[in-house]
Length: 369
Image 1 (cartoon, rainbow, N blue to C red):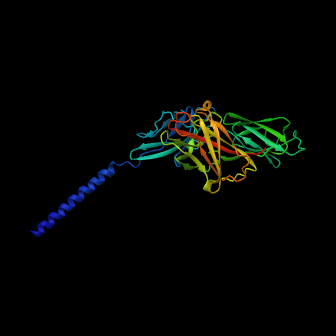
Image 2 (image 1 turned 90 degrees about the vertical axis):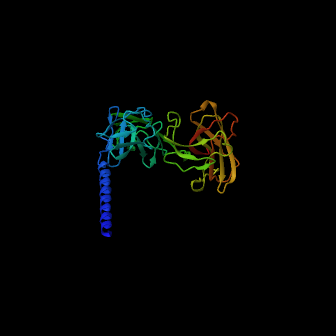
Image 3 (image 1 turned 30 degrees about the vertical axis):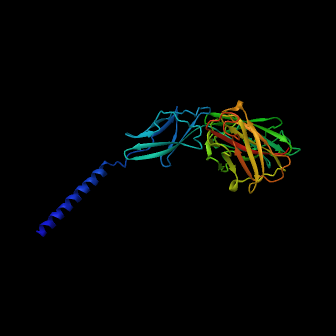
């Protein structure tokens, strides 16, 4: 009897094991882990993007002046694959150079993610030197200003110019150029042309504003004051006086937004500004309600405080406005901490205030003249 039980138990074990293995095989057979999830082509208008399936990146260079806020790429995929966002659906690529748009290809039981950049064709002059003097390049208005020593013959100068690889420049590198009046430099690149106006001035270069924060290459982290600060916000208004792609922002609550709500540069991001050398600040602000913007300046350890205010006007609602803040003339203490409060007033004063995101950018200190 015991022998019969043992035989039956062994049979059950073998039967269950077989069923389990059969289920495993069925599940394995249903998984498709070899499906193709590569983007075959990514096109914007008539421009083919460069697809790198190894790194999962796609870059498309479109003609200058293309509206990047509503681009609808046409995407070719392998059989049975799908992509999100879908082919032909418009996306905002205005900020994709710094924050690529994410696409994901699905096929079978696998997927692949792509980071997509769509940007305008652009060639830039990146350095401009004459002798040991370096030109100041403004990429916003494509201007170059260079200060040269007394006695320099402006009619016979040969600048050293650095510019985008692959571009052609005129006047050509190494040629002598007459700078007794402004000179136009033209870059030709991928069928587009880009011009810079270069001006030579005899004399000493004036002291330039100190850029404390610009959101891109000078971007210390703002600490939270009363609410979370988003240190890399996309600029909501790039077609005005502040065209840079990134800024900083925070949400002010209409109900509980009393007191300090803003951001601070202090601790590991503190500054070192001497009021004997600098006498004012400027900052760009964008919001949807008029009112005072406040800068609080402090020495290290939150000492020697001064409160500076400037009015964000009704005429600029939804636009960037550059605000100027005068440092008190009698201040001698070094400025180490800068606190920004985009809306200084209590809620409902002086105007009704709704919960909204407010932005600031381009904080500078200006030298005394």
